[in-house]
Image 1: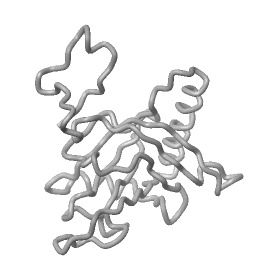
Image 2: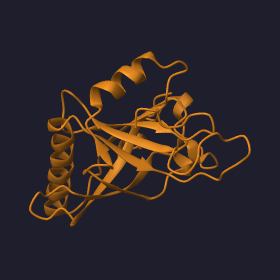
Image 3: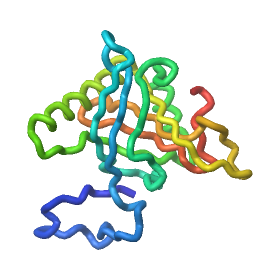
Image 4: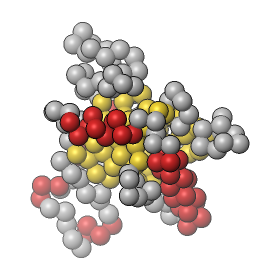
Length: 184
């Protein structure tokens, strides 16, 4: 399933009937939140950068209603690993496919804040690409007897696009049977 991000122009051009918003169904609402990222500055590894983002497209059931409003992660080892090619190969060959989402920097009304947000997002994307890194964002699920995953085995793996620093992709491992790959 691919979702279109709602905009102020929908009063002129309504969305297709298959994408008409349904307030009762949180799964179809685009996710908006923040990335709180540490390790982006070599001179101050411990400092955090707060980036406002939107999950603009999804492919598969990404379970976005389970996502926290803020993803807290680091781009330093062991929280980000140089396994981009291995992850892409895994996602290409995995059956059934793992749900994916596309993240973009959120638009902020204030032009100065918007420019900073865009710049920080692009810097994060370039940092991940240059190091061929995949950032691990663990999301705790309620443990059940049918869930084979233990703590830290569910969440989202963030990785860069090969042709644009304006987007990041997320492979979503949030069902009881979909846990992070063993090579993590």
